[in-house]
Length: 69
Image (cartoon, rainbow, N blue to C red; front, side, top):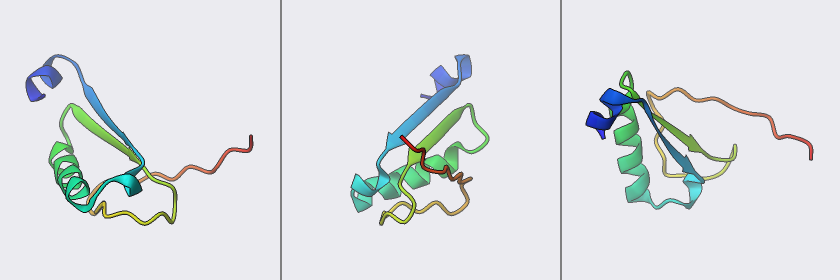
């Protein structure tokens, strides 16, 4: 992956963090922290207040307001 990112930036997208199991969330969080500052980005989505095993410590978080229909 890092060789490809040397040619063009990559974005890893994960939708629905609460649906992932504990082990997957642990690996995803660890990998996302290692990617900070590289040409590989990670975008993971979760509804506010949803229970998840994802540990976002050290990662940038953004919130979006729910749209109206």
